[in-house]
Amino acid sequence: MTPKTFLADCDSPIGPLVLASDGQSITGLWMRDQKYFGSTLPRGQEPLRAELPVFDAARRWLDLYFAGRDPGAAPPLAPAGSPFRQAVWAALRRIPYGGLTTYGQIARALERQGGRRVSAQAVGGAVGHNPISILIPCHRVVGSGGSLTGYAGGVEKKLFLLKLEGAPLDGLFTPKKGTAL
Image (cartoon, rainbow, N blue to C red):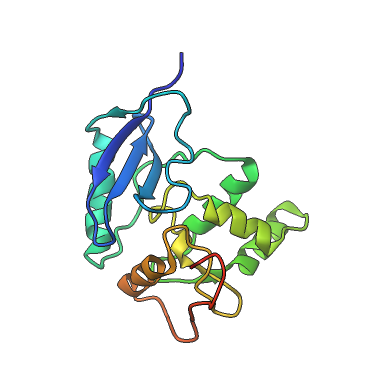
């Protein structure tokens, strides 16, 4: 039997959000207009609209977050992805509220953990395919030179989220061309 997928909507200052769940954990959180929207939803199965306790928990977390407060631990999360992507997403969850890191720093940390070479570009691919935006804070990753690149929701939303958290913005810039535009 195929596990059921549930969906719910959530309003936010950056536009409508869509939450997905397996009934116990959040499996997706997308901005309506973002790249890779719904990428981990099961194909050939119509998700059910439902109100679940995990959606309530996610909305409470997001309400605190968008009020400019550190909401603490996220509700249960279960993103679907390869072991490499899971490792990158785990690294993202360790970036503190209001903090920043680079794709290269994540790559080096994964190299230390796994003992094999990891490229910043591979990390960038995994970050870009994060199926649980905001709760898994991919917006806290910037290019090594301070470029606000690589956010599936768009650079303006990435900048909004970083400002909301009070992240250090000195030296950050919007690239003239690239994946953020």
